Image (cartoon, rainbow, N blue to C red; front, side, top):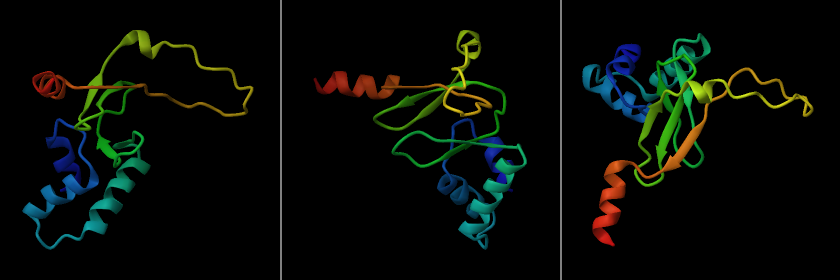
Amino acid sequence: MVLETLSSRKDHPTAEQIFLDVKSLAPEIAKTTVYRVLETLCEYGMARKVCHPGAAARYELEMHRHHHLVCIDCEKMVDLEDPNLDSLPLPGNSSGFQIEDYSIQFRGLCKDCALKQSEIA
């Protein structure tokens, strides 16, 4: 049910949002069960945890490299597909850090929040 719920959503839901969706179908399910299932899906490469500073982790099923636009007001996260970003040269390994993958997050205002701010000003 956790995987079905995640696949039915087009946003990047938090574990809490997924739990509430699953609980509406199976009221007996425990929050810890949903969290464990999400972590297991990530561990087996079936889902990915997407994080940005100061916010709850979000989950998605898109496993290919892509990037995100993150609203600094409402915290909406939107996928961004850009082949130019996919081909950026990786930094050298002088730090000893072995880079396996990367994702770029652009932070700003989504269309709705920008409109609200312009109405206030």
